[in-house]
Image (cartoon, rainbow, N blue to C red):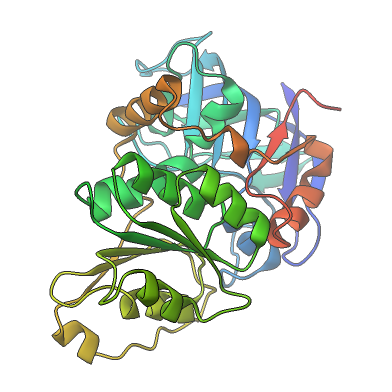
Length: 346
């Protein structure tokens, strides 16, 4: 069957909308009709060539979304035709199958184990999780990357106790989900830092008790003014090495932990004062919030359905597939928190 897809043909150039022929399903693969795809800063970095040389051009993009299973290949047992599913780059249970190749009028288009900037996609079984009954598909799409990365960075990686303090540096989609995770975990205070006042307003809605506009004040000094001696945890979600260093600088001695979530540009380096480590502070990385999708995605969905976790305000821009380049531009410029591509739009 043929399907419309956004294709990265050359880094630094707009994505092209192409009609591709989907390949036959191999064992462990699933054909999904995409309903919604999230748009992440990772795709901006890929499209702009900020992740280093790209050896797979031309290729499809997108790593979070929601949709409906149309067909399953041999050996697939986790999902069946008709199931609504969350699509995520995070590996869960099921077959692990490498990417496939689509045909573009005789030209090969590469694809990883998951791609979502398309009306249909061939997906590895272990990148799928069933949508809990009653969860809208637009909100389910957030559970593919933004929500689990931000929530997991707090709930799985930092693991604060109720009453401990936490600062989030960078209030994009993932950072805002980290704010929500801190609020759900009972942290106090919850401090959000960004240079965009609209994102700070969203952070307050999601549970931040304090916000810091880093465009007009020294963020580290402001955090230390709110929490003299430093916060228990700092989550960095900006992708800027200088902010990563700042996260370590604002946690407390003898037990404070900074968690780095943001992706820095290829070739970036992090400059740290090693004395901070001698003071008993820790710097931790996280692999997308250290989630186990089959365990954690239903847990996050239950929080959303109970009303304790309201992520709907993150969806501040909805685009058709044909407007995918505008979605990337708007995300890069900070005009939206988390764009969604609605495949039903023309």
